[in-house]
Every structure is written in structure tokens, then in C-alpha cells.
Amino acid sequence: MCADRLIDQDLLPALLAPARQADYPRDSRAFVRIDTSLRVYWHTLFDICPSLLTLAPPDGLALFRPWMAWAEQQQVSMNWTFYLWVAAWLEDSPFAGQLTDAIRLELMAASAARWAMADRSRALGVALASPRLADTLVLGWKNQRVDGGREVECLELDAPLPPAPAPFGYFVLAQVDQDDFPGWQALPR
Amino acid sequence: MDIGFNFTLGNTLPMVQRFRDEGLIDYCELLIDNFLQVPPHDLAEALDCPVGFHIMFSRFIEADRAQLRDLASQLRPYIEQLKPRYVSDHVACFSHQGRQLYHLAEIDYPTAYAQVREQVLFWQEQLGMPLYLENYPSILDGGHDAPAFFQQLAEDTGARMLFDASNAVCAWRNCGVPLTDWLPHIDATPHFHVGGYNVSVLEPRLILDTHDSELADDTLDYLRQWRTRFDKPGATLTYERDNNLDEASIARDLRRLRAVFCEEPAPCALTA
Image 1 (cartoon, rainbow over the protein chains, first blue to last red):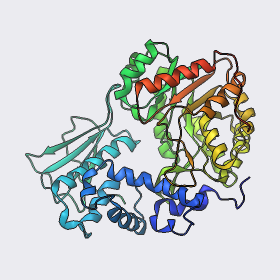
Image 2: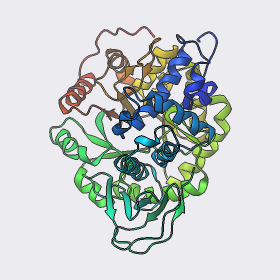
Image 3: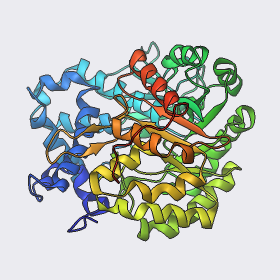
């Protein structure tokens, strides 16, 4: 048995909080364990949305650390809405002036894909919209073929839907050819 | 010992089919979460070999029962049609105070035992078949409690282990859980996992269950040393590779595993 017994559960609050990592010695297993956890959030953000690195070069940490601190303060669940809350936070951050519609769409597409991977309900798809991108709908679809994968598409609407609530609205789709609008749902935190 | 490969994403289907056709695998293990919108018949037809089911994100220890009932009702048609050799799930901590952990954590086995036992009983009942539960690749000292936990859980619920040999090696390397502590569990289950691991970026180095590289010598030695206890009628060993999906590299590892279970035992470097 290791001396000074330490288990994962002792570190849970720090596994999502970069600021808490400094509570542990740099050369300790606890520090490395926390680092291992935080790296997955970093990769989840920047591997999927690489254009965010252009906002905070070279390693994105100037963006990552304050985002994670805000997410902890707001108790963001880090579920499929992860990228949408990143986008919402960015709009009120020092990075707001660098945001482009392409980055906003990239973040929406990432959340749609994450929904398609993570949702365990019977719904087949999700539709996302932002009041900042009028008449644009981002759709995420679960994998429906044995040799396929989840799919994301961006639609420009001919017939506008009612404005989506801020920061984003969403609704789920039971089937591919669904043509009724069930109304916007507010983004869960 | 039947050797299998994990089928996690549809775009790897041609590779899985080649492994099957070349005799490198005897079955494949579906990460069934990713195929719940694919008709069961399509899966059976495309794979055309025995299957196992691995459930990744039921979060059955933490999930509420209505969610589990609904997920089970989605899984049952697949169980009925594909008749998997096993259905497996994870004993791990997926969230903290409602916030998702992207690198899963190890539960505190003594504290969580009663809740896990109740949830296992419920989840098995919903699925209509016994569960096989995977051991966590321990990083910290809580791993020492895992062997006794799984022993008690099997006695109380009938759920046996999906014993991951490389996860046990991780726990041994990281915090010294003796590999021999798992021998009764190896004897008690026919279903196993194995995969490559890697080391942490920072020091002191931790061994991480990354499924992104070829099998380590110590993992192969572990299988080789106890191969007669791993191997038994109906036994399966799934090779997991989720990252760095290099077909030639995966094929090398599948051949290594096939060699372990058809060659004479070799001298073993392990001391644990």
C-alpha cells in the first residue's frame, strides 16, 4: 500500500478546476492526476475547434483557464452543451472582438456532434440556433448506418423560425423528415 | 480463447471485416451505445460473426432509474436479435456534483458499495441478463480496494468481471496493486479485455489506459504467465484500440494475442 493514501475521490473538485491544481506539489501524483484530467478538457475544446487557438496562441491556455474557472463558478454541467457555453462565455469575454461567425458555427457544430454522440434518448437529431445567426440552423444526427457515423449539417432557412432565445435555443428531432417546429427549448446549464 | 476486436465507430467496419475474414478475430465487441439507431438486422448482417456488447455511457451507478429503464428498452432488441456472448459495463465515476468528468474517476469502493450493488441488481434486471463489469485502470491508492469490491459484488449480485488485464497492469504500475490479487477473478470470469497504455506527459509518470498503442511487454507477460487461468471454455479476449487506428499495428497485436494462447508458456519477467 502506498504511504499517505490518496484516492481519486479526494481530488474530484480539482479534476475540473485548473486553479485548484496549484494546491498540490508540482512533483506529486495528485498534480499529475489532475493534469491528466484537465488535458482531456483542453483537447476536447481545441482538437474539435482548432480555430479557437487563433484567439489565444500558442497553446490556448489564456482562453482555457478563464473558461474553466467560469464554468466552475456557473456549475456548467459539461454535457453536450459544452461548446455552446464556451461560445456564450466568449461573447462576454475579452476575446469577444475576435469572434467570427465561422467560429460561432464551429462551436455550434461541435455541440451538435457531441449531442449525437452522448444523448441516450430515442431522439434521432438535434437542431441548434443562435439569435446572433438568424435563419441558420445547425443539425446533429446520431449514427444510423452500420458503416456510418454521426453527421452535422448547417441549414439556411427559407421560412424563418421564431427567434431563438439567447444564448442558444434547441429542439430535438424524432425523425429525419420531421417538418413541424416543436418550439425552442432553453439551453440547460 | 477467442480473440476479438472492439468495433466502436462505423467507419472502421471494413477493417473489422478484414480482421474477421483473415482469421485474426473470432468475434467483435460492439460499443453498442454508438449503434442504437442502426437496425439490429443491419449490424448482424454486416458483422456476420459472434458479438459482445460493451456499454460505455449508461452511467448506471449515477443514472436515475427512468433513464436506465428507457436505455434498457432500447438495448433489449439488440440483445434479442444479436445474442451477444456478454453484455458489459463500467464501474467508474462519470461526474462530480452534476458536472461531467471527461477523464473518468475511480469510485471509492467501500463508500459506494451499497449504491453500486443496488444499481447493478436493477440494471441487470432491466437488461434481462447478467452483467460483466470492467475494472478501472487505477491511478491512485483506491485501486487496492478494487479486488475485494468485485469479489463481494459478484457474491451479492451475480455480476462477474469483464476483467481488463491491461487495466490491472496500470493499477500495479501506478499504485502497486499485486497482479496476483486478481487471480480469483480471472478464474471466475470468461470475459477479458486488453489494450495498450501510455504514460502521462508530466512526472512522476503515471500509466494511463489510452488504447492508442501496441501492447506492452508486461501486459503480454501477464497474459502469458496465467494463460491457462485466462483460457477456459467460452472465453473471450477483446483487444481494444480507440485511437491511432493503424491497421497493421492492430493486426500485429492481434497476432501476438493469438500466439500467447497457442504457444508454450515463456519465461515471465513479472515479479508481482
